[in-house]
Image (cartoon, rainbow, N blue to C red; front, side):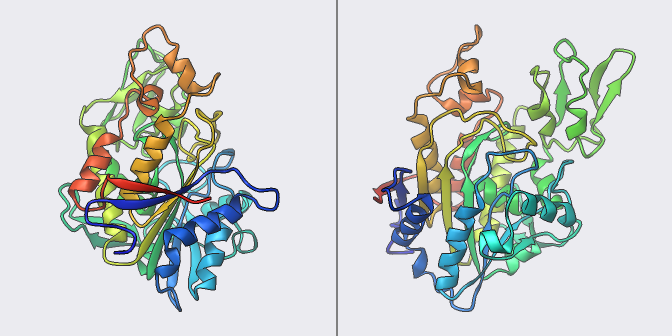
Length: 382
């Protein structure tokens, strides 16, 4: 909106987690999104999709339902009809179809009572209820496969848990929107470039990666007691990489991560383009890997705060910048990586945490295609 963003600089609003005795983080979140201008969107009688991650069963780092309820309550106060949404996953787990996905959301605390609105799985029962959305200015994707319920909404709001990620460096607003709103076909479309390769000298034959593969892309060689890749079936989703504790799995194509990042940015643009949208990121419990895993390690940095903007790209840039200013916490995956004898990293926590990943190509491409700007003015809200 014109009052919140100039042509070259976006306004990003920030508040930390320090609270007065008579308030909590939810109160500060409401104050933040009010200051950031969400109420300027005409929501009267409109369907409002609030896109967030409900967490995999066993994971404890996802955002609490209290944050979702704060956003839903403010939407209802403005006359809107909010619903929480996410789309089904490609990989095995608790969210690969709407039945299991809803049970997972409920078990993790997301019910109409706790969240203040219904939960709707965006791409339907089997992940096939999607719509082809043209990507304005897309270089890698001409039509994005987006969950139909997401696109049926009049207004789109993203509520993101900002954390590390084993493929894209970090998981921020663009990933929550682009990858998260893709149907199962859309997720496969984004992941389709790279193929996994396995270093047999490092593989222990533990088969932990096998449990993460939904596409028969991995096979166990019983004679060698090593994992192998079936390149015909591998879709390059990267779940196996996050599952391997021995760094035995990598991408066969150097450009795979870069192309994934670019496709993800183009999917995000398809979701938000041409309709009112607003974005919130909460930087707490910054786990080293995605909330998609059925477990989580300790945070790599201290809690930072909450951010909000009309620009998802500026929001990601601001969150990343804030995280890079933090001191790594001791006894974490990050400090272990930095203490490794072969460590040759710099001052970028996300690069140091997952050296096989990078995030800068996503931000650069998002700016190139007009998703937003990386230039921002940070406005603090008390």
